[in-house]
Image 1: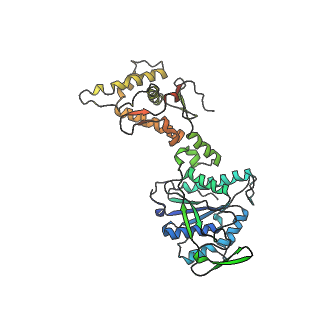
Image 2: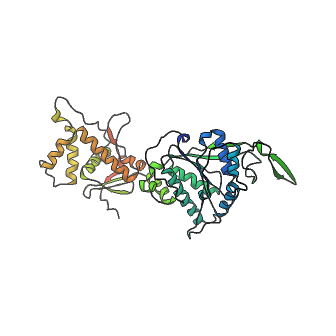
Length: 395
């Protein structure tokens, strides 16, 4: 089932409680109790955090356990919990139980092989990406159930795609109720479960169980990825590799003749004026020069504004196109346009192009940015990370 919601308009950016769509996504094995335990813990902590819908990721066996124990009319532990504690309506039909399929398309009975793990990771990635594509949705991921690899994948997927409103948790259940197949949540009245200890069987009352939610901080790497990975159908390994590349060692190669650059391993073609602007600041960075102040606007002599900025910029243009006549119409037109507005427009266009091609995080080292203290504009790359040379076209 594709969980993507096409709604992409701007949404509130506060805590998850204010979002109209709140999704609880749980990975489970043969212990579907993690669902009711998490729902109870959320209700206990803040009723507003109770999800509007629940989704499970599991295997064939796990799906059958979940359907029979959580949703069937005969047992239906989710409905029992909702009724006992007056929880709001929760959308959790059998269709929200997502079964992992193998490479042959058949649902997996269990996750046993490396290939099975890859298939689980890809399904988890697709679902998490789909939920986080809805800006009116707050996603809550639980890593308390399922195999350890599934918990890792769903937690990492949330790190890849998660936004400010999304959360990660693990439910904590006191002994001896933890992992007991008859325990689903603390009961309102007496309800015994029996635990075998040695040659004896001890009865414990479910209403005495302690169930709490541990919130887990996670690094949000969404901005590190190319937009096609965030919005498309890329597999788990593709997304991880994209982040690895974004965080890899920086290198900028500038090919003025071919009007291309290679930034962080990605080839980008730039228009001459944007390329000249970047090359201007690249040479300053290689020379170890101080940040360049913004273009001043002398009130007494408007013709002189930007005079100190014209020559290096025009020199870069000449390097890109040696046929440009310094006194010709094109160069003269550009010369007279080097004003604060022109400077800011070129800077913004260059930075926007790099962000679109590389992703916001990966692009940052290659952007011409104003220093935090307002001292001026600079390219933050180290001199040894910048070189001029041939850049092959993208295949």
